[in-house]
Length: 352
Image (tube, rainbow, N blue to C red):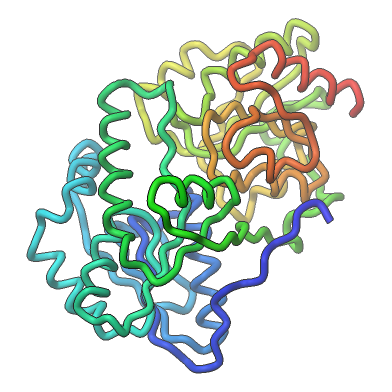
């Protein structure tokens, strides 16, 4: 097998009242892809599941949804999330609901605030922290680094009283242990092999994007500085020097507008910004490419590398974070080595 999914840790014979806490519940968030899978699995086992979130742009299939609200402006959203503990009215209201649950699964700060306080008020609650990590990379400016360091500091304080923790990679397990002393089990993010598999037809996507039969690179994920898309564009320019008709499809939602506009401005010919693509349509995009390419500077797991592998597509990625664990088909390159990355892509394309 390309990559084995771990058995779930949520099996329980007795029906339970379970709360899943996630900052957002959106289709473009990797964490919320995990939440969606947890919700479906837990409800199928007969558990009564409620998802608590600050903002939701999708609805769970079987669980209840509680949307707590936060500012609409992106800047004020970030400030609010960092200092949510100051909103005592909301905190007390949510904790008052959570104390009646049997189990809380919390994903990431600031939702860990609610889980921490609920556990203190009702020690009988089982508090599980689901660790997807917080990446702080050199491409961020001073203020962004400061924000994330505070974010990580607050998060680590709020998980001290968890009963157990689950990390989505061995890399994150080691980071969590080093930063907090908390031991965690490792459960890789499951990928649906019924949808992501070899033999899928990518011709429709190529036709839709006007690509033709030339070689295609694909990136899937948020458009954010830590994803290293500025480096990917540099590497792609080197690829085009050898293969002028090569194309690069960038699939994802921009989460840093200024960064996105700069990417568009500097993108060489052959780069296609496809925008957000719903999860159910992603397999066709993998089928349309020849190589999956990511210059991400930090990853706690990297779902698209695994999805690409399941579709029979090799990947090229930097040797950072969890990539040595998850990249089973392709080439790892030293972090920041633009020429080495381009050479890795060219090596794969020659063999296609």
